[in-house]
Image (spheres, rainbow, N blue to C red):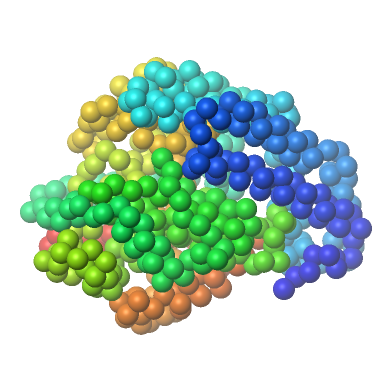
Length: 510
């Protein structure tokens, strides 16, 4: 375990202390953000926006002071003079710190404060608009968010595409053109698979929508997450309008989910497995990285690979549902006693174009992401006006998936991300899907009896592999570098497409 306090560079130590201070303020912001989405009373929104804006301004000022750049430059000079291992933790500390400093110094502190205030207010207004199914309530906030994201991109000009700086903030090193090419490959293959599936007899999943008492749902989800490795001594599970994961340290990782009596699996169960994947990643980072630039995940795509792996490749596998079903039958007597393992497996893997991204099946999920990417680019380029979004969204949903939202809550208002200002975020979901299958391929190679272990409810070897190859490194390695180290191959679509073809070919008799 690296002891960063022993690195022989006074400049490094000065930088380390400043980064730790900034990290603590960032954690305080994260606590306020978590509370805003879980327990804060509605009328607290304006004050919370001011509080978060003040902290964002402070963090940005502390991060971009000229003294920080001087410490960083001197520490880099010390690294060269002393011959530090370029793959060692101190050298990687400096590499990540340099990236963050160079990005931060391009953005004015006043812009950061204004954007934080805007997005805090926008999240509150999004909730109201979604509840009232009225996009017009949210539209003025989104218009200003789009304007500010254009301003943000210009801080990083010149660029190949206006979307590049936004994407790079969430997926370091990734380019818009690369994502678009990958998505084109995925779209072609997944649309063909979807068409083949839609020509087959449909799967019956009606039993999934039987009433499951909410209080029992809450207890059952906690039991399952604990059995799969989530440490509730170092984490929590609460409720929010949109499920998310946040963390304030490796020993304080927060998950949220939502419950509905007649949609246990669509609302609570699988979204909880998804968030657990993020949470396990957060709990698995090397504790030595606490309060350093290495403490976060490698990227949102890598993070998403973990959530999608646990939600789908584990959670919707035949082995897993074989383990899960008897426990469901015990926890909810009489609700699914008449359901077989095969019927349950087929039911939780039913393919049917749907309105809601978070409830989409594996075959159609990426199509939701592609729609959002196209709309974000169109907004930034000015090809689509904010006021036209509901209409354009509905038309694209009908053209791409054959479904049309009945209201704005089912359509353009279903995701929280735009209210958070997170344009550039959505592609990471599909990137995570692709990465998850590549990681799964490596897992099955290294743990030959993996399915048998899962069927027996033994998740320790699986989690240990992820800890060893992914989690412990935090953001030490850039995402594509980490993926290649873990799997032995560069990012490519074929493992994911082969996984979909094999699994759904068997289910639907293709």
